[in-house]
Amino acid sequence: MTRQMSGAKMIVQALIDQGVDTVFGYPGGAVLPIYDEVFQQNAIRHILVRHEQGAVHAAEGYARSTGKPGVVLVTSGPGATNAVTGLTDALMDSIPLIVLTGQVPTFMIGSDAFQEADTVGITRPCTKHNWLVKETDKLAGVIHEAFHVATSGRPGPVLVDIPKDVQFATGTYMPPKPSTSHYQPKLKGDMDAITELVAAIEKAKRPIFYTGGGVINSGPAASQLLRELVAATGFPITSTLMGLGSYPASGEKWIGMLGMHGLYEANMAMHDCDLMINIGARFDDRITGRLDAFSPKSIKAHIDIDPSSINKVIKTDIPIVGDVGHVLEDILKVWKSRGRKTNAEAVAKWWTQIEEWKKVDCLKFTQKGKTIKPQHALARLEALTKQYDRYICTEVGQHQMWAAQYLGFEDPNRWMTSGGLGTMGYGFPASIGVQIGHPDALVINVAGEASWLMNMQEMGTAVQYRLPVKQFILNNERLGMVRQWQELLHGERYSHSWSDALPDFVKLAEAFGAKGILCSDPADLDDAIMEMINHDGPVIFDCLVTKHENCFPMIPSGKAHNEMLLGEAETQGVIDSKGSVLV
Ligand SMILES: Cc1cc2nc3c(=O)[nH]c(=O)nc-3n(C[C@H](O)[C@H](O)[C@H](O)COP(=O)(O)OP(=O)(O)OC[C@H]3O[C@@H](n4cnc5c(N)ncnc54)[C@H](O)[C@@H]3O)c2cc1C
Ligand SMILES: Cc1ncc(C[n+]2csc(CCOP(=O)(O)OP(=O)(O)O)c2C)c(N)n1
Image 1 (cartoon, protein in one colour):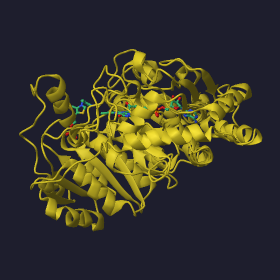
Image 2 (cartoon, rainbow, N blue to C red):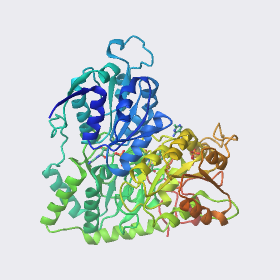
Image 3 (cartoon, protein in one colour):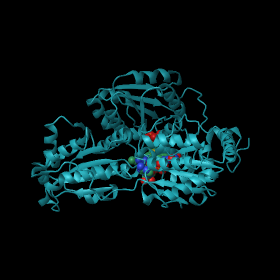
Image 4 (cartoon, rainbow, N blue to C red):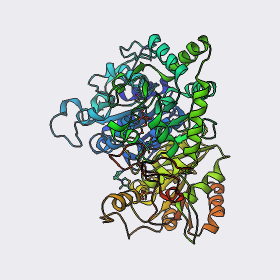
């Protein structure tokens, strides 16, 4: 059924028809007709953030944790340009977002009008697709198409720019139709390629599953199929930062995260494997290290829904374009129909080697003295919160890597972090979006003090909407990750990587009407964490940690996978200069 209505009303109607329950936004002149419609309905909840970057990251957190697309509404000019970092972040990490921006009236476009910016031009490189809608009759159709594009294939952010006169004018509303879009990404993999992969699985002596964010993007069913395939084959499994939780950290075949700050055993296994099965990962440079030394002896299979990901960085022997869930289902079917074969004897030997690598105990640390080690803080956070219905966000830096190493994820969609862009300031607003999507869950943002300050204004949002988000700040008074690189690679010249003008975080929390907790003594840590968990409102937890701690393992840039710096584990004397285990 079609209806006549204003463009502004049409926008709200289209969102309702798309099943949207929450919009993160910030008003301004060019979106006032839309805000007027938002005011006159109750189906959609609008969350007023404090900065448009915050709106986009909050929508990312909401999207990643719920599996639904995130929706953002901002004004023209500065509203739109403030959204650019979030859009780029979502594009890099494949997060589905629909961002609606106001624009100056069509007849003023190009006249340097007040708050005019070329939003489609500026955001073309940082959206999956964008539209400038100049006719009210086309508005609803474009918004429905925007949801389809954002959520189909490789998910990503899209933007719809809507001039103010288009919002005021009356037009015909078109309800969503079963997709008539020409954009129909391929979901099923090629059966010949799948059979070739199954034959390689049957023969492999040193196989590994290298999984990534694509498993999470594919949905919870894909994660279940992955677990089934791992259990059935008995092959080891590692994951990128973006894929954590798609296979449980407590799972028998889990060998930990790989990459620049990944586990020794995971990186060594990637280096020495003879069959690498990439499932929804994109051979990021944090994973491959030096390209010409990357896993030199392996046959490489790559399952990815985006054909442009295949052969972009690493040449693949068995490319499979398709959705992880669909492809895994077919792999299991073919493998079972051919008699469920693996080279069990060789794989058992491979596991013996992996167990040797595990003995390095690369995450070993010793908590001694009166200052809290960041690793210890996270180990305690893990022990005291893992039994909760828990969601973890992070900012960017050392704390992010320690969180990935010391917290365990049993399920997908529980871990929200800025991987591709590495955006400091992501975690706090993301945690707000997660809490909106999961009102009763324990939502913790593991932060560094420098990152956290980048979007600290969102404390106002947390307090206004009574969102009990916990900001767990590992405060080393340093731009820790930058300082680490300066220590290890720039002759300990600590150029502008520290701050001696940090706020009192407890008073800052109180100034916003929230709770602040300061903890500096390891002996007080458990009680302080419990106090944070048990408080029913937002908390800033200022955890003072050792200032010059380094995050290991680390593959220095330009080095190969098996050339890791190991920190404390190295002092155990079990590794030779090539990184091989001597025990
Ligand atoms: C300080 C810092 C340090 C870092 N160190 C590490 C590190 O040590 N280790 C690490 O792993 N990362 C690290 N990262 C993150 C890294 O930069 C990348 O973001 C990450 O490795 C990419 O993960 P991914 O390959 O799983 O790809 P994603 O970015 O998650 O991409 C997913 C891939 O899956 C595909 N896909 C999407 N949906 C589907 C579907 N339905 N079916 C099939 N395919 C699909 C996409 O096309 C894409 O190719 C670090 C980041 C920072 C900020
Ligand atoms: C917006 C942005 N600016 C700069 C950087 C570069 N950078 C990466 S980590 C880091 C330091 C982060 O410090 P902090 O948040 O205190 O975390 P720590 O590393 O100390 O745990 C910087 C400056 C970035 N990733 N993002």
